[in-house]
Image (cartoon, rainbow, N blue to C red):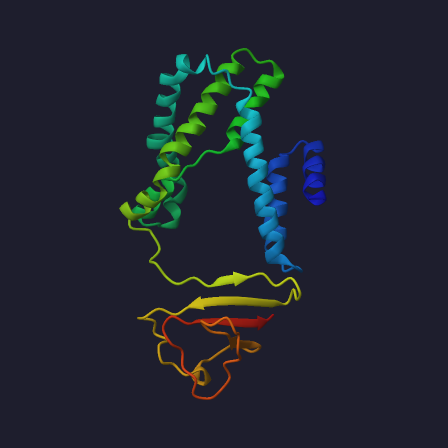
Length: 242
């Protein structure tokens, strides 16, 4: 947290964008291996959601509800133009050299979710006392709400409509390991049609340091006995020292 604040202050003092500096610092740190990485990410993710909720609440206090009905038609028209014309055209122009499929380009063009950043940027003219800045802020607020309402609630539908949704698969459940930062415990469910049905554990090509333990029962017993097979409905915990 101190590093992010320091980067924001330093870059701001040099005349750059503090927001981009914090984003780049988080990008670099997030891709580095560190102690208690998974647990730290979960804690920071919760703090980020709390900060966003608090920011939306504070920004909502600056909106004048009595003014919204007067600007609502124009704000919705701007929202429709951004969602249906401006962003798709910009996405198509930016992705043209990378030869994306048209379905992928269309999906990216539709998923232009607006968050609290446009509202924060709309506050700067208000702080500078620019004439008409209040109207700009209210319009930006309506555009963000319209984006969250129409685009945010249609993510699943758009993915299915454009054929870019990922096929369903059994994802491992990661268990927290507070006692040992070098240990990762993953739980894999085994379905009725799993290709692992009837496979003997001794024939599985596990990476070095990985062990298969546990089962459907509450007692986690080591599954190293020769000839033991995986069965439907059982859950194997793969623990690996990294």
